[in-house]
Length: 417
Image (tube, rainbow, N blue to C red; front, top):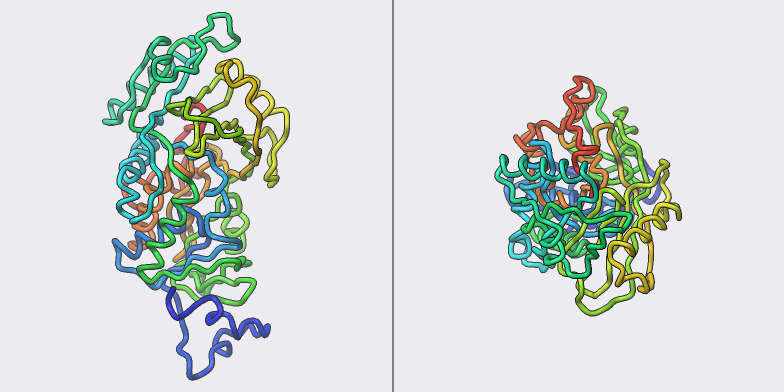
């Protein structure tokens, strides 16, 4: 932290005085940030780190209404992959996978990245055709992915049942060996430590109540529960709440928010060597480093800000997991939770500039936000620093919803995790 800590920034604002010039005594210099990032999750902290490291912009504040990494970054199921169908998605996610490989060394902090591979199961002729299309599309983009037979699926993941009479018989799968998992909270702390070491301020427990604008319409800063913070540029990366924050700057985002449920079992000895996903049942499973089985489902059917979700969907997911992996049927659930995911009409992210000068947004990842963390943060920092998008995030602009040039990964992403 620099000498301008959260207390030093706001000690005069606590009196209720909202005039910026009157908040600072003459003996103390006024502080205006070059960039304020709203949201201290993996994407926001990562963007701050890359702004400092690659663009030399260290006069940055990352602000969060809670604690760093306490939002969706701490509520996901850690899966990392890049086997998306469309060129735009595949290239952006593969950029993230490239960065994941050496992220622990980059940050000098163990994010516990594991190249255990992701196996996506096919249970029908349609699944087979769809995943084989994915494999070919990925290879054309230079992304590793291969089709495997049911016997090869069993070899990759021994607990898998190949019972031909099951509701969801295994007819093969697509396997991306370079994919895997990472420790979600370690990613947030790794970026936070590395960014703070380069001079970035991280201000926690400080809700942003409004984005302030100059009379000419450009960004002036952010109003918070503790006072005003001036900034030349503001970047919003607050999963589940971006549309609420952006609305204060009169920017409407095409987002809906859904609960996304997951659970972990009691810990057991290592038994599950990879990540397995099933589109037909909307379920996925892996094993954490602590031994817990991490199980998740698709988004709930109804929009909500609930962080617990509804019972029917998770019940269906667990029933399907027990059929595909009968050996887990007697495992006991340790805990269940829900995150809030923002979903766009084409199920792809919004990552770039907005109509407001100096205002940028990173949102709408749906269930794909965690796996994109280093790649999205890297290109977001480039966009903020240069006021122009990186070539990888240029297609993910807000304007595509006006022109109709969508990146429709709704079904192409298979189970969208």
